Length: 470
Ligand SMILES: [Zn+2]
Image (cartoon, rainbow, N blue to C red; front, side, top):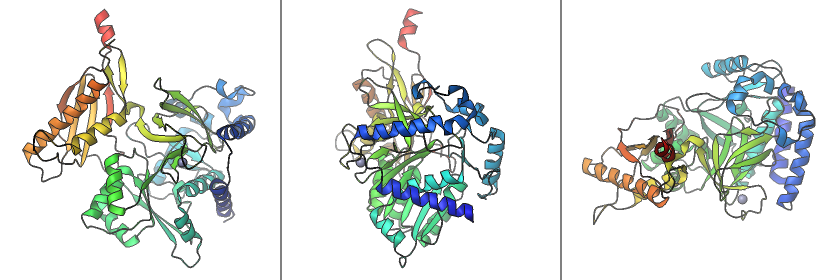
């Protein structure tokens, strides 16, 4: 019980600070405050982490850049309890298998699994203090004033949150009390059951990966349920324009975003609808991907987490900076979008020098939207809107799979496919890149509960330069 109270106290404290505190006059005031926090963290908490003991007194930018394989390989060296990866994975897998998320490792450490795609899954450790901190920060950033009022009004019905996630973890069941109902929906269970349960629950907040929001919105439009959520929040996947529109149409609310992964709670939408990096908790160094300095891969240092540390940790994601400061007045960096993972970028040789250039995912997403909205030649009807699509690169071949609504006639599928090819070629031509061969592949549905990734580079092409010289 005392542990529960400690978590709750930390949650409330963080909530209050995050919601009403942290008022910085300017960006430089924020950065000065941040560098003091960073120094404190490096001289104290970081020195309990075996990996960093030999770096005592080193400046932040002298510390090595850490990526996920490095962290997984030396897992025990990156946490202050000496917990090896095997023990953490085993505890997490056991909890997930039993759908019982209460067990923890000795010392009150909670283990979570990231909702990652195929390949390596992230494992993370959190103490009671860190769970409280995480829950407080996320609630402070997500709850609208009306939702907060409902939460704090004793006679109102409890604030009900429906949360769709692939794997639950004790981290996510922290927030469950008399004024707050937090109901977890397991993405591995049949969606049809969830639709009924949701309709009965009538959540005030609906939180789910973007593709699930899109699916639920379509269920609502087909009359399978009638939710009236006050807030709709997209997590865990890139929020794509079609799902965003479907959700806004179905529920008449703007979709906000929470960008959160194993490595921490990275960003959330503000009142103006922009994602802001959580620079009150994290230090972010951009590794720029383009000359104009708009897209970057972040190196994170989380100076609030002590159990498992993430210091100059290289994320796999590509973030796009907003062009101008946010109208909301907050001085933390505003993002235009989380574009997806680094291998969501496709690559083509330039026509001028043959060197490989990236084709950023948002350009391709926009092309897909254009292909659906635009009419075909002459007076033909507009192209049918797609249920889903996939675009994969294998060298100089781009393989396109389109998922059409069931009743689409064949000739319209053919012309729509041609339309998609045309828009994609246009993107390459406009950027002065070699146009790849377009191929069509049959649509294969995604495994249930899997994270959706529509655009993916499976294999980069060879640069043309090396071909010429050989
Ligand atoms: Zn803002």
